[in-house]
Image 1 (spheres, rainbow, N blue to C red):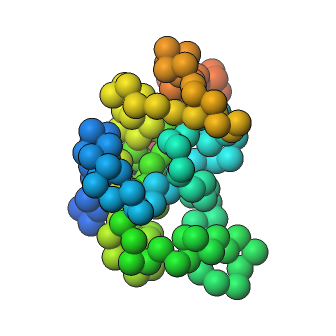
Image 2 (image 1 turned 45 degrees about the vertical axis):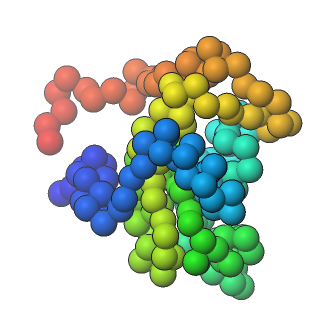
Length: 158
């Protein structure tokens, strides 16, 4: 049985990754590229990269095809565009980039370290109203907050 991180590692063999400083460079070099943020809408509203398109990971496959309720026309038309997929930490973006490649998108990469790394590289983030996010306050947002029932029980056997 595979675990989450094993699934990520398996898909990583087919997915290219860029570090945040490389993404910043690609944005300058290709203003027409697409930043695809696959986090949930509430995460996107809290903070995102300017100009990015939010398509949650859970509806991605139907969002990039015509004639579905989730169809996102800009994404459907982007099969030949350079796409950089982002999420919070760089895990969901690997799965999403792999799915896009399987569906025929030609130039897809995942941003390694996700928006957490983007923030650590001191790159700007916007809130849902387009205002700059205080990057010092973003540290709290990116800190994991596990509840007691989300922790592995002491008696758990794999």
